[in-house]
Picture 1 (cartoon, rainbow, N blue to C red):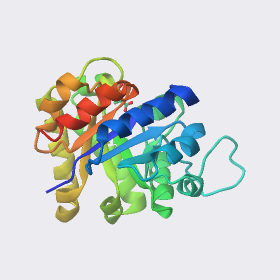
Picture 2 (cartoon, protein in one colour; picture 1 turned 45 degrees about the vertical axis):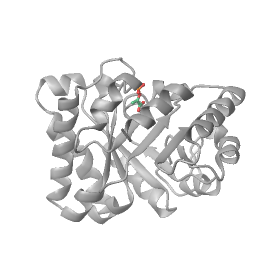
Picture 3 (cartoon, rainbow, N blue to C red; picture 1 turned 90 degrees about the vertical axis):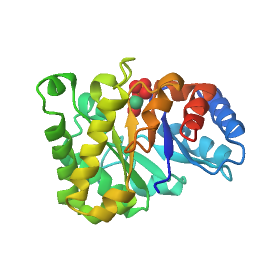
Picture 4 (cartoon, rainbow, N blue to C red; picture 1 turned 90 degrees about the horizontal axis):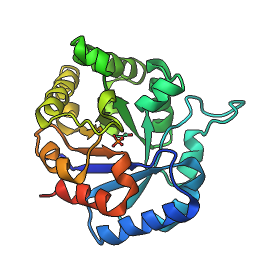
Length: 250
Ligand code: PEP
């Protein structure tokens, strides 16, 4: 039985004060819950949020990680730095990084490997654009995105990784994939991994991301290959995020 996981992606939102309140609100709502729940916070707030969530069930994550270990890479943040601040997770390959900042399948694979050198669990984000879906390329796109990582890191690296299927057309748009649309791709991703290693496929957590909200999360999470969610907009409100988190347990 796979554990479920719900991860908030705060993106480039909030202030010191508002993110502190948000973290405290989420922790208060989680109580002593031991399900898996994390927030990926802006780099500059890692230290502060890390202190607030220390000794709570909420885990800390970053929204990206450098593709190199250290050196003259102005503006980048390395995996060892994230490790120093207690990050358990790092997103890699989020579609906003791929679209606006030129992250490629190869650089995403390098980021994935860098995270693992520091025992940080990479959350590998994959998914197709609307155009690619309309051209019926969804499966080949996600396979290509997976292959880049499998080639560089090896399939065994997926023993300590999470996959997030995020159809690009559903991110921040209010258009959620239907339960069946999401399940179809999740099932394909799991089968593709199973073709390389059945044990890993059975245990890897595959999250859905893309306009997930309290009112649609329950249906999505009820699908057999959806193990949780990567939540953007709705994670900026403690009540909404907690409702989504609770709906996975129902
Ligand atoms: C995301 O950014 O990963 C995401 C899923 O965003 P939203 O929930 O706002 O669509």
